[in-house]
Length: 286
Ligand SMILES: [Zn+2]
Image (cartoon, rainbow, N blue to C red; front, side):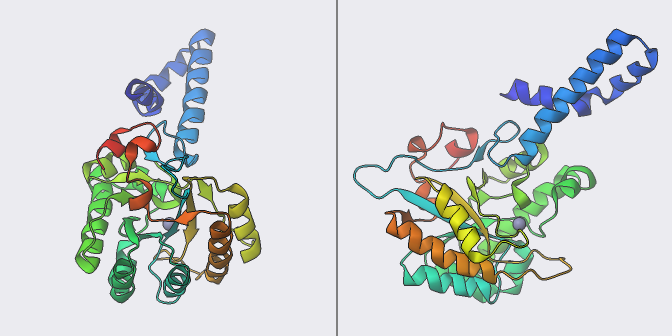
């Protein structure tokens, strides 16, 4: 895999070769075009397909088979919070069903709403790192230095730990987009990269709570990690209403419990790494 990864990162390495086009030789030109198109296709898949492990060792689900008579597990995850209203409402729903979840919070939001952070921790949920300021993929890849990307990762966990007292093990890149720069930052700051295996689409315009819940309930299998959004990333011009997510969460939790799932945190879902996916450097670090 490391060899394949360095091949795919090729466009960076191969830039100096591009002037060979000027030679005008048909064979050289055609070969270069094939190589470049292939690399771009593989990189695109590695970056944008949430579960792709081509560029980064990501964890996208837990054990598919429940161990020794226990219930199949499902992990709900909420990104972009905490939020003073919506996170509290989701915590109320979880408490009513004695269900647990994981909150991938943004560092600056954590600083703004420390009481919500303390409540998440006190009620037995897991806190994860969703960067300090929620920069987008293009910024982290082309505008930021590698040190700055690492700082995004390290600073967020330090902030979350200071406010909540939790030890942060899991990192989720914004929008689940990842490449070698983001993967290295997570590894160097001692985080496992966790993406979702079921994308709820709760940020899509025109999708109501029933449609979001139906999409999730139609897709879930034991061990799945469901991606939802309770908060609003900093610097957004318009405030999206997360009420749809709150309402969808009610339906999802009731439906999943009816189908025999135990709703657990990522700490619990990934407690037995050998029972999860094939071991990866990330998982071995847990
Ligand atoms: Zn996000």
